Image (cartoon, rainbow, N blue to C red; front, side, top):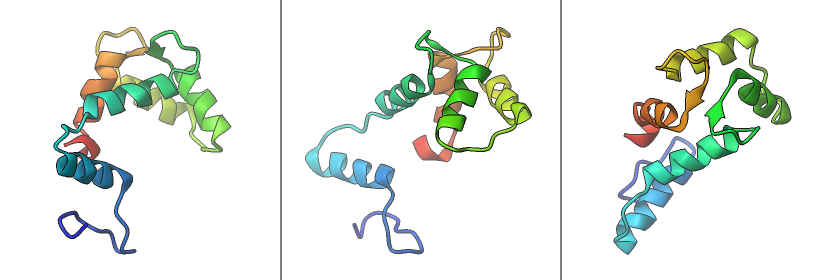
Amino acid sequence: MREEEIGKEGLITYTNLLQLVCKLQGAAYDSYGEIEQAFQFLDNDCDGKLSAKDLQAISKSYGLKLSPDDVDGMITEANRDGTGLTTLQEFIEVMQRTPLFN
């Protein structure tokens, strides 16, 4: 754990732990697979696309308070083809730009 960045509480994040374990085992870290799992989790109606309705359903079931504007902003940020729905590829592109997967 000394090789990894440890937070103020003296804890390591799950992602950092996973990266460390993969490094020690010689396995490549599969960020694509992790992003795909997140997409499938969020795809509430299992149609292969994320909609505002999907995100509202997930946020409601986990007690998150996201306004319709917040949800629409998330979809708009990821949606590149103008359909109002986010595909897996669009989701991957957005997630790979975040610090979590860099």
